[in-house]
Image 1 (cartoon, rainbow, N blue to C red):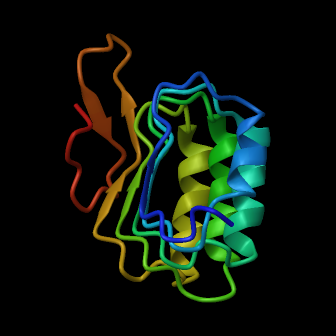
Image 2: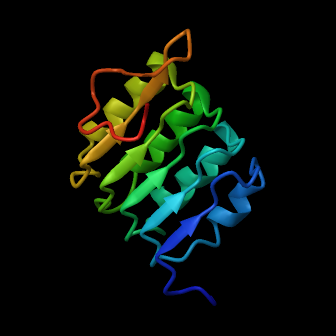
Image 3: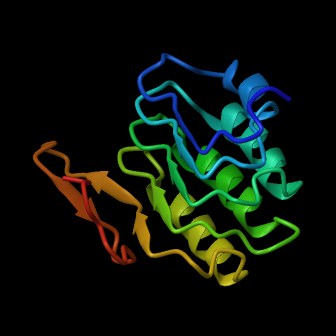
Length: 150
């Protein structure tokens, strides 16, 4: 694999959707920071990422940003499943999910995944939703350090 020492990959605002699954399967184990914000990722894309996480293919991942994607509750559930089913604890320190249309069901699945204690290094969790007027981000009460969400 040509990118075995790649640490940071920014795919923000690349107009990715389901084709991202093929990219996820090519990510190197050395990857520490993955920014997927501002794309068109949905449930199918997150199921692909779930497989990568659940097989332990990203053992060095420190930060994941999937903000500004229409994941919906099923997409957040798929991501949560990947986080909780990793064969070893993930060193993930930052997870950003702002403006993903997660709704209560997605956040509940995320909370249950966090209880599996596979992400014990998590320091920044931003599962936010916009107010109805779109003015600012409103936390759902479980953000530990909600930075950059407004």
